[in-house]
Every structure is written in C-alpha cells, then in structure tokens.
Image 1: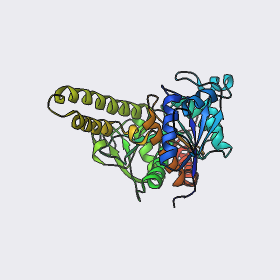
Image 2: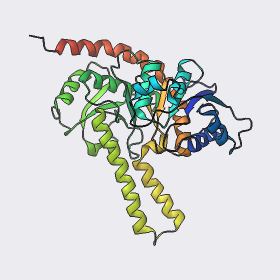
Image 3: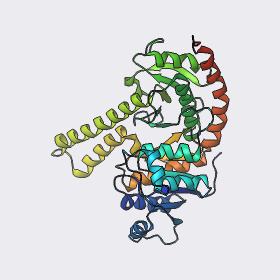
Image 4: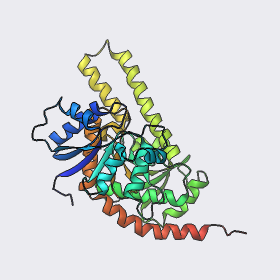
Length: 348
C-alpha cells in the first residue's frame, strides 16, 4: 500500500563532484515535479546562492545548516569525529530525528554507509549493510546485491543480502515472487568458490525463491530478479558495464556522426548509455539493511540524476521498504544464524 502524504527528503547538497550547483538544481526540479518536500543540507551561504538562480516560489524547500564535507577517500569514522556537523551526518540525522523520511547523497559511499549504520542503526539480522541496485537496462528490474560496499563476506551475510534484495524487489517493483540467484562461474549446481557453495547451502533456510547459480552473461537476459554476490564482484561487474557502455557510445558517435542527424544520433547514444548505466535511470540505489531510507548515487551525478535519486528515495518511503525489511530480516536471521552456528567447526 503506497502512502499519499507528502514525503520529505533530506538532500546532502555538499556531496558529489559538483556540489551545490548540481545538487540544489536537482532538488529544486524534484520539488517542482514530484510533490516532494526537500530539506537542503549544507553550507547555508552556498545553498542560498544556488537557490537564488531558480524560481522557488511556493516550493517546499528548507535549508538545514551543516559544516564540512567527508571527501572520497577520507576515513568516515575519523572524519565524523573531526567533523561532527558534516553534511552527510546532518542529513542522515534529519531522518533519525523525524525531520525527513529519507536521505539522498552523491558524496562518499563509505561515508554514506557509515553514517547510515551509525546514525540510523543496522536492522537485526543483516550482519552488514549492503548497497543494491539495477545493473543493466536490458533487465531493468534485476537488482544486484552488493555493488561495492561489502567485500570479504561470509555466507550468512550473503544470505541476508538475498532476503534484503527479495524485499526490495517485492516492495519497489512489485515482483510477487522474485527469483533469487547467486552470481558464479557456472550455472550448474556445485560450481563456484567456497563462499558460493556455503551460501547455497543456507539459501533454503531464507524462504526466498532461490533458483541457483547464474553467470555474468545471464545478467542482460532477465534470468533472475535478485542477484547476490559480495561487493568486490558486484562492483567489478557494475564498473565493467558502465565503462563498456561509455566506450561503446564514444565509438558509435565516431562511426555514425556523418550518417545520422544530430538529434537522431543523440537519441540512439542516450539509449545505449542508459541501458548500460542504470544508476542514471534511478539516480542511485538504496543502502539495504539500515533502519531508514538512504539513497546513494554517483559522485559525478548532475542535476537530472539527483532529481531521479530523490524520486527513488520517495518511492522507497511510499512502498514501506524499511518496515518490511525489518520484519523479514528479523525472522530470517534466526534461521540463517542458527544454521551458520550449527555448521561452524568446533574449536580444538
């Protein structure tokens, strides 16, 4: 059941490669077109300067002051101690305090993950939060979990990722019985490394519709709705898909620019780019397993991607993603953790 009251989104305007000029523009566009109340978190001088460039009359926009930014590459926890009023902390805190229903950032993924875990808290049973999202436009409702935040995972963590992805698929896209698979080096049962095999043994305990292994070349063919892997593998897949798409677009432009009218060429290139860069279609993906909606996008995102990320966050709130995630993970964790403890070798 989708809620109908206006959703409030806290936007980290200082995050990303381009900061307030793009994040504020995207927030204004979202507030104008999507019936969203936006809390603009950042340096009030910079945010006000950017707002002045837009027609914001009667738009539900407010400014929440912050000080400092956690840059990409900085240690999040160390930065939090040194910058307790950093924009990502203040924006995430707005959700915790009930000032906003969700937070959106294009800043450091590590900082966003840490802020969500520390401020919002981790849902019982997840073990470790994960970042999920659609991977390729040929399978637009296939979500891959994780895409870069959780490496060196254990089987019970991947099992919880499967449940988190299952809930997202049901709530966000309305898939009634999501097909859940593990990304591996072969589709046959028994193929894969120890992590894949041990995770497979736990899948029956999760209650998801587990269909076994799929391979990388299955991703564009809608073979599964939820694809589980650790963040190392998922990030490699995502970056390869995005990089290949950008390279193909450049090559097509070289070959077709003399044969197609500019508007038709741009239409074709935009289609190819969007099919291989699904993060652009949704603006970002949700952090799964934390007790609140936190959506993270690409650092290089421009205003249009920010607007779409805000819309994605709005839908996560309206479809009650977090309450359902809490209910499912709490039940599943008791089973998977018990199975993990039972199969753990005794100390000698």
